[in-house]
Length: 139
Image 1 (tube, helix red, strand yellow):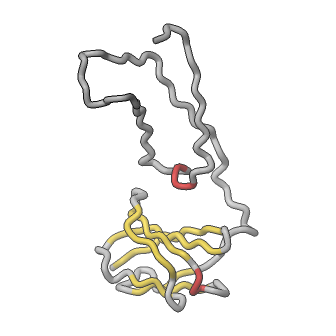
Image 2: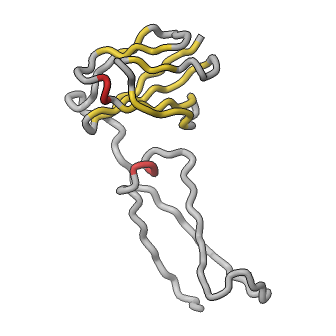
C-alpha cells in the first residue's frame, strides 16, 4: 500500500482496434493467489485520469483507395469499382453509429448485403494497407 502518487503510462496505439473506437473500455484487473476470497478488504482509487493523444484525422489522398460503389441506395448487392484487384479487398460494414456488424472479402467486385436490414451504413474497404469508407443506404 502506498499513499504516494504513481503514474502508469500505457500506449495503445499499436492495437489497431483501439484507434477511433467510441466503444473502447479500459478495465483494471487485479491478480492474486485466491481472488475469490472476500476478506472485506477494500481498494480505493482517487484522482484517476485518462489522457488521450490527439491524432490527425486527415487522409493523404495519394494513399486513399478511391473506389466507388453502386447502386446506392441498393437492395442486396453493392458493386465496387475503381480497384484493380477487387477480389482481394477486405470489407467491414458498420452501423451509422460505428458498430461493426459484418466483415469479409469482396467476391468478384461485389459485396452481398442481402442479410442486413434497411438503413444507412458505412462500408469500409481496405487493400494493401489503404482504407476508404463510403456511406451506403439499403432500401
